[in-house]
Amino acid sequence: MVKRILYRKMDNLYLPIILIVSVVLRLGSVAYFGNDVIGLPGVHDQFSYHYLSLRVLDGFGFTFGEPWWPVTPPGEPTAHWSYLYTSYLIGVYGLFGRFPLVARIIQVVFVGTLHPYLTYKIGERVYSKTVGLIAAGWSAVYIYFIYYSAALMTEPVYITAILASIYFALKLSDSADDENQWRNAILLGVCLAITVLLRQLFVLFVPFMFLWIWWNSNWKKTIHLVIAGLILVGSVLPLTAFNYTRFNQFVLLNTNAGFAFFWGNHPIHGTKFIPILDNDTYRDLIPQELHSLSEADLEDELMDRAMQFIVDDPVRYAQLSASRIVSYFMFWPSSQSSLISNISRVLSFGVALPFIIYGLWLSLKRWRFNMRRPETLLYLFMGFYTCIHLLSWALVRYRLPVDAVFLVFSGLALVQLFEPMAEKYKASRSVSTTNSKLVSRDLG
Image (tube, rainbow, N blue to C red; front, top):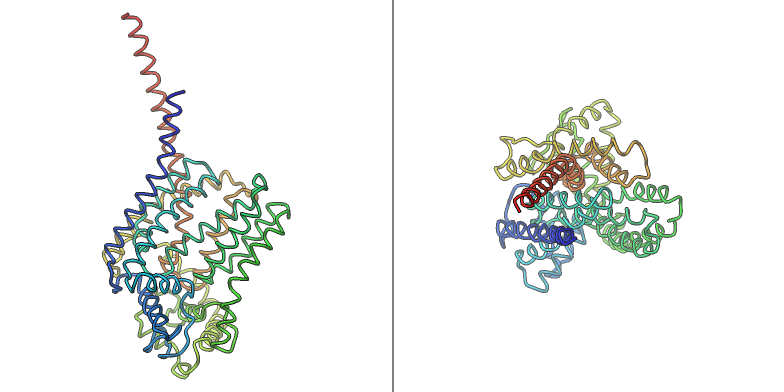
């Protein structure tokens, strides 16, 4: 009994240790980035968020003081960047001074704690506490997550918000948790609002999530889903109205979808996707006669032209989309990448991939097309998010939200691989202890 209590107490220490390690490693990323906003691989968007927040603090609103990416004229309204994340930087800079270091520290403590904790809770709910702990431990040391945690851009908070949305969706679908469903509905709505305000792309997945919860709970959760949906809509509408006052047309949240879809499917790629072109090339691809349009009008025009690319040559579009698989799931080093990018790619996704594949295989064996099982929601998210990027624009950076869920399955794989060894070890220790007692008794 005493040993059992001690083991239970040790189990309760694992998660706090994981969270501490996670935060400490991410503070190392803060030290690497420092107090300056400089050009580092994969995090160039932080320039825009940093300078946009300074413009707002200086009283110029959501505009730039010089021609800005992609082709936004100085002084003209922009909605290319997340209002929510920009507001976070505005708040930090307004309270503590214009020090990116402070914003980085606050961010990594928040993300470094919540990201592995939510991974643990999802793994525990879908499989077991042990799977959750291993998945949380892996997410704590996953180099991609450590690297991006200190970048002044949406990725780290967005990934954490996705995990929170998935967790509360799983809780809301659980009929055994009926007494807390109002709270779960409210928390789901808040998490979805944060996620969508960071990246409007996620709003496309929300109907699939709601349909699964609704069907999984025998339609008992309709009112709870309405509550969550109203919170989401209530968070989006004010910004949609704000955009209308600035552009005199409907813009849901941001103006980046048309640009991305146009560039990602432009004939310049042929049938093989080119993940990164230089900035001047992206600008040159936009016809000169369109540069005088407002950002919102330009996005609409580019979306129309992108759709025309597909209509004109659907076979090329299919081949181009298939070619994006390589860019999306890349795990090997490349001579075109920086040292830090190659290290991050190989030692994070490269190491995890065999365990992810094995864990998915184990999971699918248990699933057997039972759509009510909780892992169904994880499959839906991973499949949807992957397909969206294969059909539009695929980069390793855009795969990271899927990686966060993948690690739950890597945890399942490790448990399956090492639990039998642990059981054999315990059994051998038990036999050894028993034999020692017998010998001692005989000698006595």
